[in-house]
Amino acid sequence: MYSSYLKSYSQFVLFATVFVCLFARACNGRTSESLDWLGLGDPEFASFNGRFPTLSDLKRLFFELGENLAERIELLGSVTQHSSRKFLNRPFLSCANRKAANLIKGWLEEAGCYNISIDLVGNVAGVYKGSPRTRKTLIIGSHYDTVNNGGKYDGVYGILVAVGVVQVLCKLQIRLPFDVQIVAFENEEGNNDFGLVHTGSLFYVAGSAAKRNGARRKCSRILKSQLFTKNSVHPNQCLADYILENTPYKGQGTPNSYKSLLNYFCREYPLAVENEVLGYWEWHIEQGPILDISRKRVGIVSAICGQERWSFAVVGKGGHAGTVPMLERKDAFAACVEMIQQVEEITKGIVSSTNGTTFLVATVGNISIAPGSSNVIPHLCSFTLDIRSASDSLLVFARSQITRKMEEIAKRRKVKLNKKQWHRARKVEMNSGEMQEAIKYGAYISNLFEWKTNWKTKFLRMSDSVERSVPMLVSGAGHDAVVLQQLYDVNMAFIRCREGISHQPNEHASKQDMLAGAITLFFSLMALANSTRQ
Image (cartoon, rainbow, N blue to C red; front, side):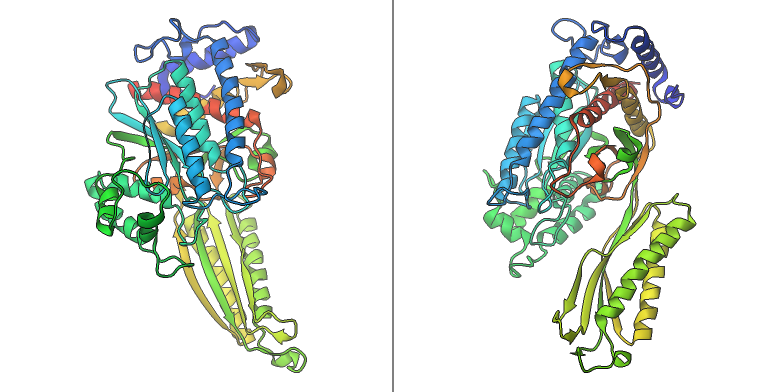
């Protein structure tokens, strides 16, 4: 019975687990049992309407949370920059994102948060206050921008589940032994004309790093790379110019020069946390099929894959499609096709050699041919390579094997191969200590709640059969947690999404799965609160 928890949470977990299992079997369906086993009787916690909350109270609030989650996601899903509103598109610093930011700000207020603000790049943050004497903060967040023609759940779920759970804490009048800062980040996706990605979380880290003496150099580096990158659409304009002239988040005291802008992020950043930071948590849809295939609602992330992105250009020799003999051709596209085929064959071969135990994927996602005429032999073919793995060494090995084979093909076909790496991120390990154990505990307890038939019965009950295993997943997608780990310990949890589909209009997560993630977060906070007080 989850013996690993006994070391981390001592009698708290033992008592909670035994109580709930016995209650689930012997008292299934009763709604008036005390919830003293949650630790709510501790002096750190206030009363709920003059009494301790019961299981009935908790189930009612959880059900309301599930309804609110679904309604708010639908509402944000209707906020789009696309003129016909036929599909969802919220680019960086767009009017649609400004509207979304204001909606999130309002929901933070409803949840009982304080110090709510929106920074110059559109990050939204609010703090749910812990006990009066606390000097610690847990950060929970995700992003609210979207890809072009994207889905409603990516990023947004992680923000709204945190808001919803904090609202439950507020209604229960629970004050944790730490503050909870909820942050909604801008531009995680890179949907903008500046060629920038993770802008919101990078500025958040830069502004927070400025408060930490050892990280000021990193702060300066981040600011310069983001602020002064030229716009690909308007080459004479950088992000700093755009913020000074056009940002939708201008307010009183808005910077009016490069110097004052740097000062804003280095000295006056409104979202920076003054307390000791316990870590960063991010809840997200899985964006893959593992949970769906295994029929699990919630999984815990063990690591985020390292990744590299490359651009390749094959330079051949153009000519007339009807007059140049086949044996004399230097067809750039034919060489390119053979190279791309090797990407798949080599990657599959490496995965097979490890019996599928190591995560490795490679994708050619963009290809262009010049001149692109039906009667002309292509003289130039360009393509991209995205390669990711849960092992940095395996990633490097796979990439070296692929590029070596490409060079052999280029030499044999007498074409030239140019290559350039334009993105690299190392594997990010999640914190494996008490933070991850708290999330495991939350996921385990969430398995005790189920729906008798379907959502419409509005009957959330305790389960007779308890699923003790919690899937551990490797994230192949990048997240804001990759940036936050530069300063803090990070942890993530995933919920199931239908067929693993993401970055598509038919991206979907059920109410039940969203609520399972919310219940996981609620009990994870309870476990962390108990651990923090010890």
